[in-house]
Image 1: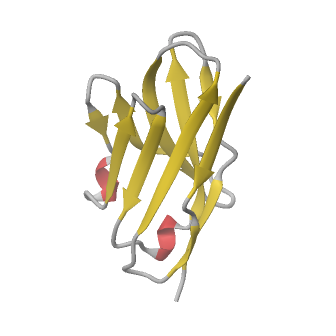
Image 2: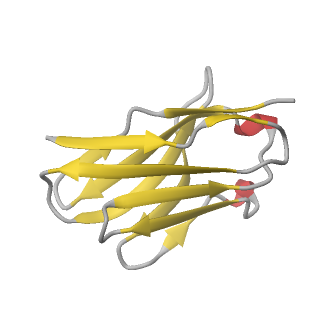
Length: 115
């Protein structure tokens, strides 16, 4: 059984930063990608950052460089550094781990940006 444990969410003011983490444990095949998605109320889940075990990273253009993903594939852990947070970043953030044969989701962590 695979377990993804997320942490780091919370309530912050606009302009502040947060760092999310997600650690995978259990029995699984080699992890090839680790990603972060978010889902705001009433909206679809969208990708905000992607990383590959070859060192590649990708972000949607509309984030304007505010988020940085870093994957530690030796420790099966992925981080998301979020800077200059805005109210529109308010959402539940999910980590997504992709192995050779399966994809897994974390339980989600709430990020609220409000003054």
